[in-house]
Length: 467
Ligand SMILES: Cc1cc2nc3c(=O)[nH]c(=O)nc-3n(C[C@H](O)[C@H](O)[C@H](O)COP(=O)(O)OP(=O)(O)OC[C@H]3O[C@@H](n4cnc5c(N)ncnc54)[C@H](O)[C@@H]3O)c2cc1C
Image (cartoon, rainbow, N blue to C red; front, side, top):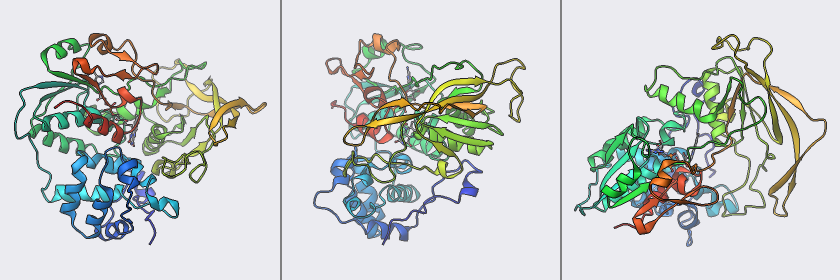
């Protein structure tokens, strides 16, 4: 029996709406898939792959036997938010599945989705307030996955928990970054109701450091958890950056999510009828691709300075490591040109009216019409990792674009963030925040590790040495 590859709704259907792109596999499909699990003596999925340490083989066996209640009980020993990870986790467990040595891994993520949704349908997901209050209070700064995970963990230990969030709603990048077509935002609302019933308080629309001092929070609580993510996106400071039509990826993604959840009345950016260029070949770029396609872009191109990864697991990342290899997302399959080995040199100004179906904000605003790029060649390490590039002569060309999104990652927490000084925090050379356990201040998630994954943020939020 093979792994099922047909996991998406039909392309023509899904690219016309904002609903989740993945279909729900049936009980029968999942029973068959989980029965492929070999229940390995040394389960790398559980002990090595999953940052939460989920009991994957036991969970698989419960699903294969149709015992969904037991599967739910096993899943939630370590996982407090399976409805999120089961939709957007790259499934590190599957990459370390022993089946990867000879065939394809067991489908763990999709079975997790079915387990948690079955649990919600049957009313098994109920608030679990602490049996006893411990009389201590903690302030959590930031309501992304790391902050939520820390909040639920400490609440279960009896702490009084207040989460402060600068945005209008909770979820962090789950709500404001990841598109609705990957993660429906009603799932965050559904979880919020449970967290509140457990006694967690949310104070939204408050930016700690500005509206409320972090020092004050430290003084009036027994502990502070800093879970503020990595707010600074990497920019591309090449000539022409000031032209209209060039945006950071999150301007598009956040605006679209806020629009779809009713926070604002119109999306701030529309790609309708435009030639869209996404600079940056990773997941954030792929999310821009899917969003631009749903807007009705005329064309979507995604470029990357790095070389095209191998189609199969590369030699530099043997099993059970997370594989360096080409990843093609559902958004890519919806219609996008992808190119690699391209260095962006300058943005080109439009000297003619934009091709957009929409009028410009002002007649005279200098607007982007393309990006001049140059092909590069990479030198590789003996393990096959790209290490250094040089330009290939006479390969300059202009890629036409009247809307450009920069999706080149995040740069950590700026030292000027007032929370750093107010709590007296130190930072690593890469600007990650360092916990100060002597003052009961713990930094978790992306702000402590650098931009990473939801599952790692969740694991980090659970890993707080406070009783
Ligand atoms: C576009 C995009 C798509 C992604 N897709 C995936 C994916 O598919 N799968 C995956 O695993 N990972 C994905 N990631 C990465 C993942 O979203 C992050 O690793 C994860 O959200 C980090 O969690 P966090 O809680 O540390 O930070 P965040 O999610 O960034 O949350 C930080 C929170 O702190 C709040 N905050 C910041 N400063 C303050 C302040 N001063 N006062 C109060 N509140 C504050 C912010 O508003 C935010 O709500 C994606 C990231 C992006 C940008």
